[in-house]
Length: 263
Image 1 (cartoon, rainbow, N blue to C red):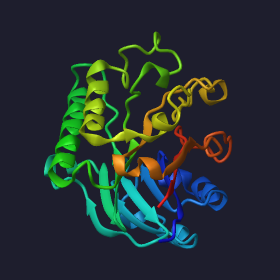
Image 2 (image 1 turned 180 degrees about the horizontal axis):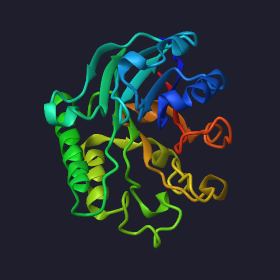
Image 3 (image 1 turned 60 degrees about the vertical axis):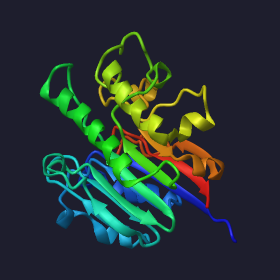
């Protein structure tokens, strides 16, 4: 049976309309096979399908005007595409899309940003995490081949933020948020980057204000998670800084995370 190198990428584009030109330019440079996009801020009818099709991608979109929105784009057609949890309340915000590629399940997630402890947005974020864990338990098994990718809006450990003391107990580092993300991992997911690089300091998001990307003062909040059966097939995982270190066109505040697999 032949083994093929497959590159899977996750990128919060912070508006596909604003970032289309840069995203297409990046995809021409980087041979990505499967791409998960978050924070499209665009309805499906306005997604730039033709631009992606010209590069050989078929895109599946769960979009929303102005906010949120997720997509899966693949060089090969995906099967059993599902949009949302099937939960009217949580699916009002378009944050989850998943599909099957061969014998592998691809799950693309955009977790809410949240807000200060006790706020409605704080509670909604935790509720979303609870629903996401329930979704995994209902529909999958840790024995399945799963790649879950996306912007999870939580820096799991202190190594994942540039200043743990300054950012302690702030949005993305609060113990309740970290525990919610750990429960996903405890279900049977592995943080691909940390599995490959236990001690490496690497961020995926940098604030626009203060030139934080040039100072490398960021947070690692974008992940590729895998199940046990994919551990040995994971050959590398890295953050591509090229799309983030742009001045024009203005980049997203996130950089893409790329997993390299032999499948």
